[in-house]
Length: 488
Image (cartoon, rainbow, N blue to C red; front, top):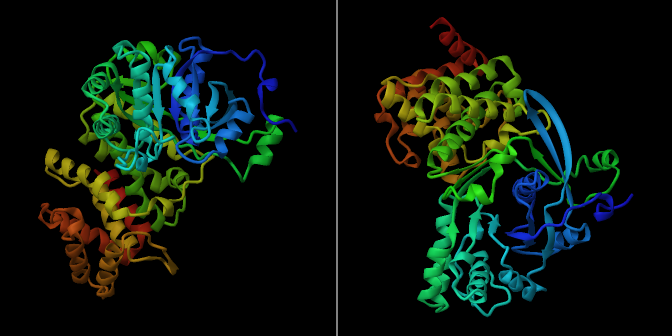
């Protein structure tokens, strides 16, 4: 069977290179390059991507062997239905092996049509390596490589501010654009590149913070033979992703003119401040994930999709989101409900096996960052405790007992967290007083950076919920909790 290449794509359009991309991995190809492909096919962007790899060279070789082509296989809920669809992505013109062809990489800096730089080099990629030098070919760090490239462009166009670039990192750290710019300026100082170059970085280039959201599992090794048979060709770079996508770019509105994703119907926003969007994502998507995990797993469920489809746990998650999380957020209600519906569709995606145990990694610190702020905000606004978040925290304490019935739970967390719960549960004797001691000690633990026993009524509420879970079992305890809502 033939490997995907230009001969299999009729009338492939050629576009000028407008994008330099650091990273050839699944996420960028299933997210950024897909969006560019959508815009190109609608005639609104008309630009191609050149890719360089942060490390290694295997994927660059595969990419060039396939003429920059690959298949994106999207699976998930779309308009309320489970949908699978695929398309050949044609937005990448070529890859450059920066380790073998460094001169080609630098030559791209002289391209007057180049306008954007995107990256995803993992969170560890946005680091400063003081051993990097301008004369290295290439530099070790991604910011070092980028600084050398920008200096080459600065010289090629004699400091023309109109030839600066729009730089949008996609690494999953807060204020990623600001962080990257800060490191670039550190290299400019380390390498004595001059005040004029630093001024050009400030005045001619636009570094944007961004928030990205799409699950891209990547190459489907377990189904590749079946998919290959369906497609009728072999694709060594096939990527699987979910239907949902969100890209929030914090930057000036002129970006929408040059990157008109909104005109193509894409869920990409250019905003003045992405903080509210990050808060929504963390509290609704991540917060619901973390809160549902101990409850659903102890109820006897193993995956996210099963938890949403189950009548009881599904009701728990929906009420948690709509009754307790959304009331703590300040964006328009319609926007919050729309995001919540999208989250629930993603949770019930029948094509992705998202195991609750995999989400349970470091659950204590996750609850602290994703759910505790909601719990505290809810109490501050309403002067009552959010019952489902309280119940979830009780379930979390029960989960760290390490047992689901007779089945052992393989807990994954920092050793001091595991030691804390092991000590607490070793002192449990079946009484509500011993449960209260466990709760008091857990709520007073230093990981929360505050004594949660000081939150009015929290210790007593968790004690009752945890005692019910331990004496009645999760199923009866949860069902009883939900009946209280129905009675109200």
